[in-house]
Length: 370
Length: 247
Image 1 (cartoon, one colour):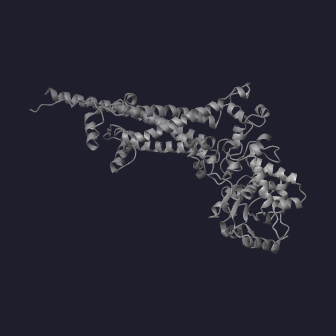
Image 2 (cartoon, rainbow over the protein chains, first blue to last red):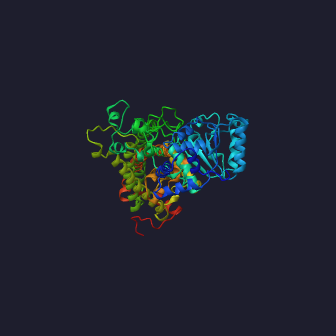
């Protein structure tokens, strides 16, 4: 094998037919929101280009991103993109361990310098010199710095790598830090979500392979193809929202009727993700479809920024029970009381003023008389 | 023996608030009420039970539509007011709102002492805004700015027009829509508190000073003591300010 294998070669080796391959290309084009002509482009790229070497690092995380990825609806995603071909190093799925594994990583980093894609799952603790997350005697920070130095691009998988997720929630004892704050000077693609949708993850990789450049990103660094719409905008319960029909509690009649979950804390209106369109588990369902509000897992600080089952969020600095409206109501009452007190004082003073004016007038009248 | 006269406070009618300022004020008041009412509904919709099908109802849809239309009017009105702060008369000028010297803070302290704490002393008789009011308005302008930024920031992703799109960087700075929405909601409370105090103080000044403070925002005229007016014209003359004095 002198020629490096292409994605299609690997698929054939694994026993996939041409038909399976074209189906895969079609499905990916659809998920990425591309026009039909892109199917051929994807197929051509996958059949002609050698695979992109990938180093996939795991830091402070739960591996749900990897789990989501390998459960992507099309088997080729797991079999070819991740499991068999692309990964030169990943703690979770590689067969090698110990020195062998470290060697494989070094090998990829040296051989494909400036060519490999670095995927990072998890945040990096920077507190106490990073001792909270160490692999093979190195801190995650060191590993990230080394691996990022020769990477062509960095993909931050999941909310941990994009914004720190649960371990960065207050008080964030390990100072869990998202990747974009540590890696500078490299294109970073953020794919937030806890976990991100498998098809979305596959779509990002296929985009890199097909077009040989990173997908178009929004202001927060997320691929526009998957994160430009709010869950709310693509939600099938949206008509109930617009009609003003809401579930008041999870066991009421409205919940049975499938009304909008806005008032029981659904974060769909503030969450940018493809859940309403792509859905989960091969298009089976997504949280709102199963009767639970969106918790906003792909949004920054979603752990600290609100309660899961309420619309209102705690007003910072006034205790966990104080919402903006409670604080505002108290301030309004205090203002009202102040105004009332001031009005009483003003009346007392006005009487004095009137007396003063009267006295002045009388005095001046007297002086005139003389 | 020298002749003595009764000392009479002569009042002069001064055209303080020009028509554009008054139009701005009332339009702003109108859309602000609309924004607060619909904003409260949007943040926590009332239970309106109905046996109608969702397709026959559009309650939240209308609330949001009113909110967005009012927001556009509010925004352009705000921009217009900023412009008028440079071309309007001296009582509408930006210098009324932004401290440009020590005298500004001296006047603020005087107003605080006499009007708010109600201590004994000589009242400051200003023609337009007093310095404290002007300074508070400066903060309302900042709050206007915050509401415009956060509001259009939230709206940007729903719109195809370039204008709201200009604000799409706002959620990126604040780390997502959750935070933007919260700031938008908190700032609304500033306006509610402001309205209570603002309306009260208008009545207060009219009640105590009797210079036509309340009606001045309708007709534009205020009744100003001759000495106060002369002093005001001496410190910063503005020949555009109309009065009923023929000279």
